[in-house]
Image (cartoon, rainbow, N blue to C red):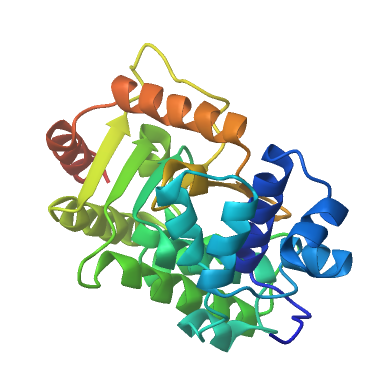
Length: 283
């Protein structure tokens, strides 16, 4: 397979998982190369996502690394096909790479979980609401860049409408519901859209009201994408300088617990539906 100059986030993750398998086996890259009958730099390039690997080759590597976790091996094998052009590739060299990696992550996720305190989650934003969010970027974005980001965000929502749709749990603080981005009309339309989405079978929206007695975590936005096996889950933290992706086992466990605690502190989807209706009436 040809060398890649710019591996995608998914390809980088596959390489990182291969490195984890090797390290769990107690092998150096040189020892792994000897077992596989290849050069050491080929092992390094595979682990850096610069060189692809076939499904059969990956299964052979896992065997040499004494990995008996068949579900994990098969999940990794499913990640091996070389880059298939996803719709997000149309935005390459237009938008930051991290945004493309996020769309690719969502596309392959088996379930999504979001917790927000200030903004409505991106996959649930209306175009007017999203446009107002991007207009607040620092430094200020030129109008064409704002529109590129808005269209990209709307296209990401495909995962909620495809067949089958990706299940999505949303935990939103009351503060995010009451922020009037774009004014009362934009906010009202946004909340009505949120109510509409909460009626879908694969969507569960939970509101944490101001009068909740606890609020787990620091208040930052958390986006959790579940993979085909728990080891391939990914956490995305939305930072001002761009998205940050976490996949270390300790971090995954931490954010699973944190989201579970937030869910326990929040209203049920049915209670949340009534709550959001009341917020709309207040506008």
